[in-house]
Amino acid sequence: MQKDYAIQMGSSNLRYGPGVTREVGMDLADMGLKRVLVLTDPYLKELPPVQQVLEALEGEGIRYELFSGVRVEPTDLSVKAAIEVAVEGKYEAFVAVGGGSTIDTAKAANLYATYPDDFFAYINAPIGQGKPVPGPVKPLIAIPTTAGTGSETTGVAIFDLTDRHAKTGIAHRYLKPALALVDPHNTRSMPPVVAAASGLDVLCHALESYTALPFYERPLPARPILRPAYQGHNPISDIWSLKAIELVSQNILRAYRQPEDEQARANMILAASMAGMGFGNAGVHLCHGMSYPVSGMVRDFRPGGFPVPYPIVPHGMSVVLNAPAVFRFTGPACPERHLKAAEIMGADVSGVKDPKAEAGPLLAAQIEQLMQALDMPPGLSAIGFTEADIPALVAGTLPQHRVTKLSPRPASADDLAALFLDAM
Ligand SMILES: NC(=O)c1ccc[n+]([C@@H]2O[C@H](COP(=O)([O-])OP(=O)(O)OC[C@H]3O[C@@H](n4cnc5c(N)ncnc54)[C@H](O)[C@@H]3O)[C@@H](O)[C@H]2O)c1
Image 1 (cartoon, helix red, strand yellow):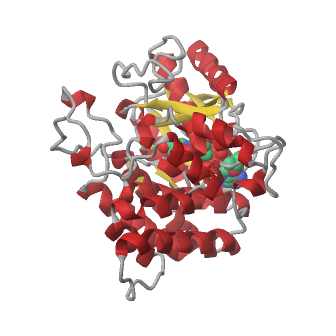
Image 2 (image 1 turned 180 degrees about the vertical axis):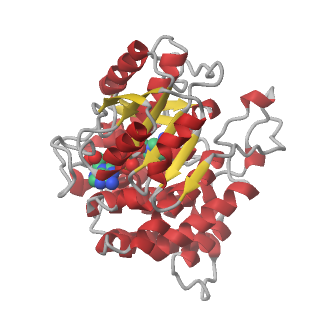
């Protein structure tokens, strides 16, 4: 197999600063756009970030309709409802105000409104047809309200396929928002459990992209256009990922325990976008691949303080619960990277004698310590899974090639079963 020899950095267009939300009306006016669809979820609808956006649009005479039917942890059905509204309204542009659930829903609505096709056409293969997005989509301005997914910087939209009880999505550079307005004020109202789960998502984005397979170990694509955005760790993504690990390690506990700490929250939302630029150009691997069936197979778990009335495993929680097991497993593949990450997180690595054996467990211990401090459940069994679920969890992970193939250590079905058992 011929291996790849090049990397491509897809830049994100991002404005960061306290108060930038109120600039959105001027941005749209300057882009010559007069009629937009604003998307959000039902719990955010009345909160300041959305209200500020609507005022900003009114101030500039931009006509808008508000769609607040985004489902937290979107599904194919909820995404289709948004697509229907987007298609009917023939909007010139889209504004997403919310967490990853809202931004991802807006990306899909924009795509299918711009290039209508069968719903499975653009969904990642092998679950969907994996058809590339035909061309640029309409402008989407993304305004994150969590310090989490980094979706404002990426060309990825994730949702649950209800029938299959597993998440999948669409990934293409053209889906990147035209502009991200990253405003630390917008996370002021974030409930602590959302701050913890979405913040741990940031950490896992950064750790997974930093420890992903190197880009030069991936197969060489036949044409440059076929080079995936998730191309493996590379010198450019490393810069973003390492800085994000540092910012999360220094700020997440303060942001969780003292939401009034403006500096900690500002650093967390910056870290989320930085990690987005890292993993958006490198990829994530097993923690995310294994999280998709975990959230898709939720039974009756309801995290305290989470704003939705239905059972849910918040995305960041579904990811981090696998993380200690995953990094114990991947440690031997690139021990120096695991050690460096553990050190940035606060581990003393000076006494390490056998990096291959010790690096994974050291990093895992740092993550476990942080999970405990952030009141995360101590494992998959604490959110209702048992050993009997392992075959289904493995079956839900195996098709997630886009991410699982980036593991620095290949994971067979048996390996995945052992990882889920460890994560219990
Ligand atoms: N596109 C990507 O690159 C990418 C990456 C990672 C995750 N995701 C996806 O993003 C989704 C998770 O997004 P998320 O973690 O940002 O959370 P979310 O959008 O699911 O929101 C979580 C909850 O927090 C509430 N909330 C959000 N911001 C708030 C605020 N400022 N004040 C009060 N309440 C607030 C929401 O109403 C919701 O109830 C998942 O579906 C996941 O798969 C996408």
